[in-house]
Image (cartoon, rainbow, N blue to C red; front, side, top):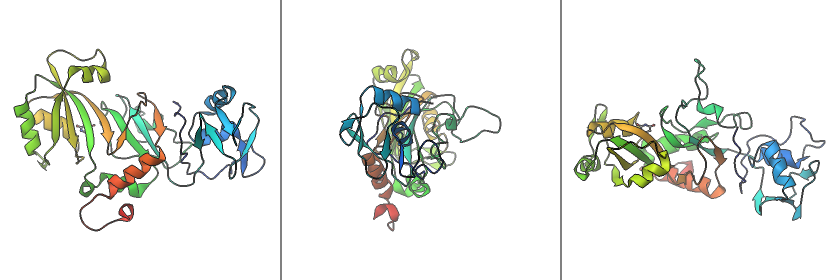
Amino acid sequence: MPDSPARQNAPANLPVNRDGGGTDHPHTMRLQRFLARAGVASRRGSENLMTAGRVTVNGRVATELGCKVDVDHDVVEVDGRRVRLADGAVYLLLNKPGGYLTTMSDPEGRRCVADLVPCDRYPGLFPVGRLDYDTTGVLLFTTDGDLAQALLHPSRHVEKRYIALVDGRMHDVELELLREGIVLDDGPCKPARCRILSSAVAQDIWGDRVPRGTTCVSVVLSEGRKNQVKRMLGAVGHPVLRLHRESFGPIRLDGTPEGSWRLLYDEEVLELKRAASRMEGPLNAYAR
Ligand code: URA
């Protein structure tokens, strides 16, 4: 399982060390275990961080693998950034690779995104919406059902930015149709922001897997209908060859490698809640 990089926040919805795994007091635990619980890295990865001298406890470098921390009082930092175990919901993002179903289990045993995120560490984790089997990029996970529901509700208009590689040379006149709002078989689409991007952007995302005679296009949607980007671009005569989600609301990959996950920063969680609170009609919990 991929490690997440060191994080300032440490959402962990797990009770602290009630499972008898290596501590002798409910509020103390081995430092490497603390770091792993906080989502900084795996236990082994955390040990490597410690021996590399990157971890401090109360300002002192902690390289001794057996050392313990007081979860409630000690100040643990990795590369100078505070790491905490917090009660409450977990928020993380996965840079989804192609070839994975967006589901937490598959009765037919096909590869699914649950294989790529730390479900054991964070019970109750689920994906916010879905990406197609072959779509790559930002897929959020949380244990916070209310926030997930708010983010996906059409009234909140949370924007998702996709980069598509389409067949054929696309022109502005076709994009104009999407900007006006085309009609699909399940109803009219809201006007979409879209523009043609340079082939360098496509190469950044897909490397040398970018065939000639294709166009790279950015599409920003605030809806989330099934296969919407593929159907919209197909409807204007340009079937999608590859699709990548660059952002979900304010959340971007921010260097997370394909197939890896990372916990969201505290500020990102706040921004996400703010985005989920922008709505028509009465305010909800996320708008207060
Ligand atoms: N639109 C699509 O067509 N596919 C996705 O995976 C996401 C948006």
